[in-house]
Image (spheres, helix red, strand yellow):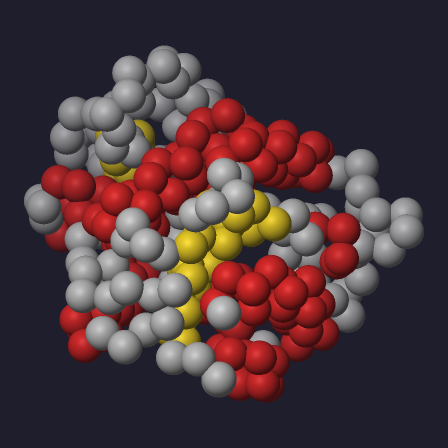
Length: 282
């Protein structure tokens, strides 16, 4: 029985990824070749729901129809509908043009207009600003979205990019691979929007304790992303230490679940980004 599949990330570079990404995620499925089959107990998780989207986009097949035999798969189907709905709305919004400042990312970006709405309004209303964040998205999802219409018809002055934390949650990619995926996204933006400046943010810290393994993973990814800063079109900004105290701990006042930001967290983000963003927008 097939539960849900996720495609490999499309790449022009030689595929050097590990033949077995995880003992829990064998590379086999009855739904198609080159996919990862997820055991049923993982299907309901937010990241896996996002990967369902990518499977359908990559194959164009009726994967959900043939595999949706459980409550978890019905939830995944709902996630697919939301992802597609938002993607199509972003494509339409881009076609109308008139975007000076564009945010691209996952739930941390999307929630800037809910949990962080007061800050969003006060900080960015002076420009024609758009938020193309989708909860649960990954580097693979963003790559597909910007390759399939979300950057067509616009010429923003700045694109703010924050992506990658959900790839870490999946546990199937190394820091090097995640950084390489983000580099590919930057290259797509550069190719499609050659005059646009990219403000590439380092992945934000997560987990309350500074010695959590995920902190080291984030550090390794961000160290690689820093090399993308060319001082002309791509600007890397690491603001992670703004969200922690002197001991490196995260307060629930800033990140209630030690991942997503509160209104206070969004204020910290905006304050940390303001000097560079205003310079790039001027």
